[in-house]
Picture 1 (tube, one colour):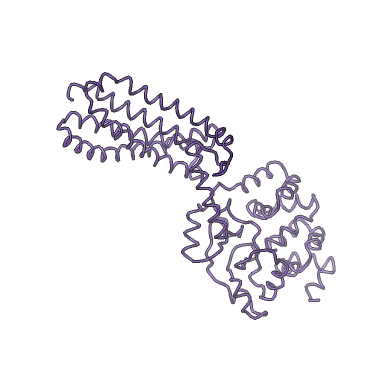
Picture 2: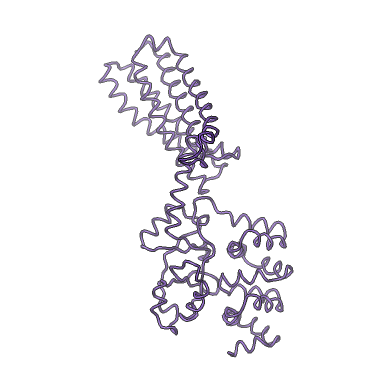
Length: 436
């Protein structure tokens, strides 16, 4: 029995040590059963219990919280930094997490729930919060003994944290095996350690994994505290699934549908959107019908209709993709729609002017009609401006209505771009028919 362990066996002396040397006490408590640690913290004042608990490794701190009484849980969790509490509770299953949240004030509990809900597609939503971390001042022998008790866990790297739970280094598992048992972990650690911020996108995480050629990546918050771990194989699987689901949703199919789903299931999921698409197609056709006499008089307009519609459709699709990503990663909020729409309006006008110049030149060479070249140039600018704004606003409006912005957004956008493209081109042609 060490001197610290002997001291912990005596109540008053243990309390004194916990107040004056919480780091040393926490290091000793790491070797004890979480139930014993919880009993020890129950005997301390709330501030002392918080100080010691914050210096335990995340894994041991979480295991200890589970065994605290309701009163002590309320006092401890209310005094800790909410981000740190959220990270610790995130390692628990849903039932255990809710049980701990239920003893807190409703305002704090709601805040902690909000902190644990990371945007879809970010490192926080993809990570495994059950990461095994060790104190940076530990030894290789302590790691080996602990890992032997976790035979079912896939561990590629050992992550090291300081007294505040901040990531300070990592040790590849093969280095742990090759090192001497008495070696300090920091002596064989990799520093600085490649890591991902909790708000990083999936793409940014994959870039970091490839840049450092590692199989796993620790996830930290803005203060550098370790929250979880990302594994490359699981990340690749999630990326493939999310990409496939998004593509399927954007064309009106169901993310639940599989290649071998029953015909009845397929019909039930697809038919409603096909009917909606049919209605929108008739809407676009009705716009063309309004200008039937103009098309009959100038048949070249019919030839050029797909050019205007296609260019505006591509412009809208670009704006749609960027806006959907911004909403998914919470780069933008619904209330920022004027700024997003304004950006797309300016971009649409600029790109439209450049494309219109090329288009009008080609049309003039083909038709030898300056009037027709002018009409398609003006309509190209107007339709691309409208398409850019529409591509940004469709997912924002769907989000405001609490609908999935990916669900059939391309069907809605295609209708808008077709209608505005046809209306601008044929409308301007009708107004300026005298110069055609």
